[in-house]
Image 1 (spheres, one colour):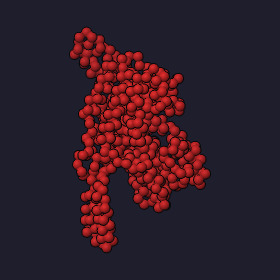
Image 2: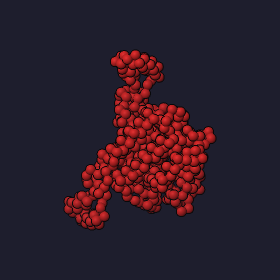
Image 3: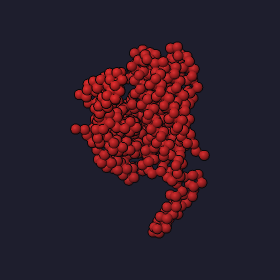
Image 4: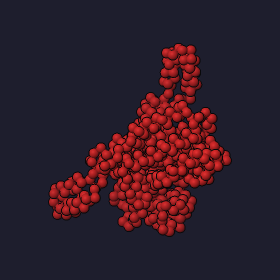
Length: 251
Length: 251
């Protein structure tokens, strides 16, 4: 019922990207483009791979609640995944900006340039067309809605309530059962029937289950099938990287 | 000669923060402040602890180059550390904004509110004074220079060239030696003296060493003693958290 992360497909696609970097990148890349492709895009690809593989290894293996430290580590890896996903699209935009002089005298600390350099924004795509990259604009257009939807994970990860891989959740039918058990336990403990109370609490904890989801609060709380959502986002990311490298930077 | 991460001191301070949360947070926190303290600040504290502990465990143990996958993992953890550090200061600023109505009808998706809500910015500190939080402003002022310096790690981590924990570096005196060996090796391989060439290449690789630094490129390339820098930044972060919780949110 829950997806599995398509890690083998993704690994194959990552090897394809590494192959483009060793064999097919055009020779006349400027320094700024090289920097953002090699030390930006590729470095982030490797970090995203680390996130994906670790999440795949730990998520959804059993219904036992996750250890709290493990849940924290997976939360960290998931937030890092979305930051690197968004950041690597920024790297592609900077690389194009340098290579095709999309602004005059590119300056990464200039606020206006930083606002402009956003791969799927209207202004950036307009400028691609004006700079004779019509085909790139055309192939990127279909990803715009997805991009702005994905950003709902990037911004909380960076400055608001981070995405959460919870160590456990209660299923809908178990929430009430757990509340009843907790209340009965509290009652017993107040009456100094400590052992019976702890027994009920233990029964309540047994209802907690790990399910392979993450929680986003932006500010509405929503749950996502973790593997399903990563599969969607990573597949789109791979298609965008392929398009930009093929049209923008391949020899 | 290189620092060690002060993990035990930090762990003790983290326990102090958890204690404030269980025992001393004031009772009349509004929902927005609760959210940003519990699911923002505390969640990020736990992620930062995971970064710090894993970095401490793996960094500077030997001079052998790191395995490439391990170097990628540590790079991910270091970038996540700085994003959570900056993000948790944003959480404190949102919590104050909600609790003291620093803007009218707080809206986390409003661009103006998002620009305003930055704990160490001039406008935010001005507003604290106007809202009778003069003491908080006074105790935060000394951290302003540090904050803007630390931001040089946050922004590259988010959208430009990420901070790098390199698997190995050459010491200054070994760079030339390695180049000479590589050139001699290439010469031998061109002459079909494959085995002797590979021997020289192997000698060149032996000069690579792991040293516990990270590299920041923003856009100038600079190296930092990893533990020394994390010690500085984490100690300042802890002082800021302590000040904001004590003056802003303690009962």
